Length: 189
Image (tube, rainbow, N blue to C red):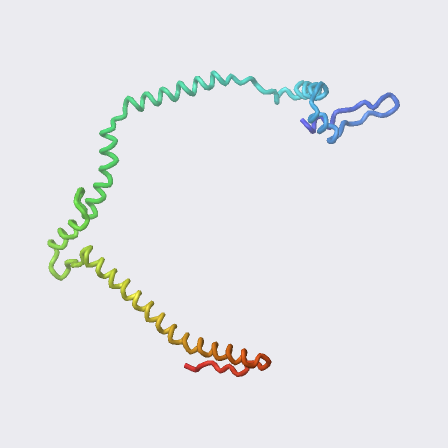
């Protein structure tokens, strides 16, 4: 629309030659609205009928969509059987579990016990949830012991450093002009 208006001729009067509206003036015409804009829009529609907006009957389209939706929903409600749906949805996981050697409605540790009794003694798994818990507690206890040992070792190294820092501080208080840092000898370990 902007381009159409910008290329329209403008009559500047009898003394001047006609020119084009231009993009700046066309933008102002569109922004201002009013009769001038309406006249240009009408000229555009006459010159370009392919851009004419055809009327939209939204209520008819909406009714057709509602009718189509309701027809599909009614068919689905009529054909839907919740028991069949439930069986289809639960049967697939049950079949998959059965193929993996699991039995429905049996707890995991019961299944492990059943597997262990069917295997030779050398292949039976002896770890139960209680023994796994005990192993985890022992592991955590070992880690905590290592942490405590590390803290003690750090404390042993920290003591001489703190004593040396106190000595330097005291010597600095006694003689602030001398540089105590020069006489600092860290403990060798």
